[in-house]
Amino acid sequence: MQLQESGQMYLETILVLSRTLPAVRSIDIVEHMGYSKPSVSRAMGLLKNGGFINIDEDGYITLTEDGQEIAIKIYERHTILTQALVRLGVDPDTASEDACKMEHAISDASVAAIKKYLEHLA
Image: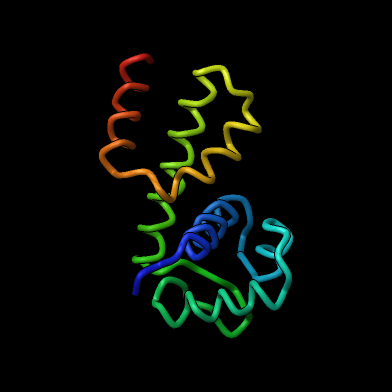
């Protein structure tokens, strides 16, 4: 199943929330992303049917292996792009917002080159 940008964003959000919350529920995603409950519910259904998340009988959401792989990749891209933009003088909030837009379109080769460059600077 080909995952759209919005699906990637949901997986990234689940990953981020799972690092700070004992369990992730749809309402946590609603509050974090600012989306409506029906939108999040529909997205969770699509992600579950696509094999990217599991939802247990209590409504707790976890990433499958495939979902985790995508979420980590998108989160890493976000982090690398944010760091690069901040180093270029962009304020952190704007850098994070811009990275969020870029992380879905940039090639693996470009991300790898930026990451290598940032490591070289460190």
